[in-house]
Length: 216
Image 1 (cartoon, one colour):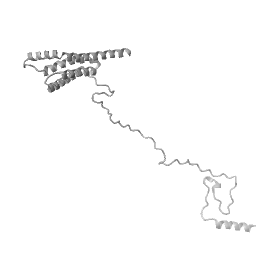
Image 2 (image 1 turned 90 degrees about the horizontal axis):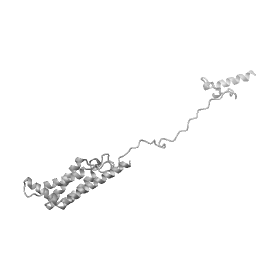
Image 3 (image 1 turned 60 degrees about the horizontal axis):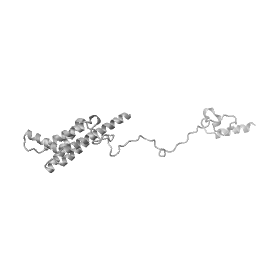
Image 4 (image 1 turned 90 degrees about the vertical axis):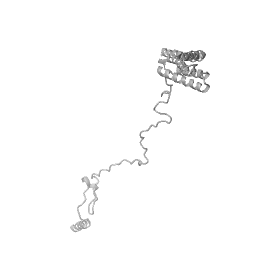
């Protein structure tokens, strides 16, 4: 009986490769591969710990939706930060002060009178019609705090235009005064028309503004 046992041991020694035997990790006997001449492990031996599950990889970077970046606001064409000429950002017409009303009245009336003098060699209907238009614009564009400047600056500009551009018979001071009085008398219709129109517009604006304040 001893002979067959010794033969099996010698056969296992011959078939086993040289070197130390591999030991299972963490002392688990079931994970080691049994060599020749070694009996398989029993069913009650502890099993090796299961491998951890890795999360499934997502779609590649090319297929992922890009994160929304900061939006750039481009300025609209035709619009600018600065207010347009003659208008504010709100779209309302620019209001004139008392000084601005007087300057605009004098310059505009002198321009119309000079054009009439250049074209027709005198101050006629073109000068009177231009004065009415100037008074209308002054009454519309003057601000609420300086409403009285519109009907006052108009006649002053009218008289100044007559004094500067009206033809006189002589070069003396008396001749200019007489020419001014004559011009005012002959053109009284245009003078009262422009001044009266400015006064009516100013009065209407005053009443409308008072009603707005009372309704509030």
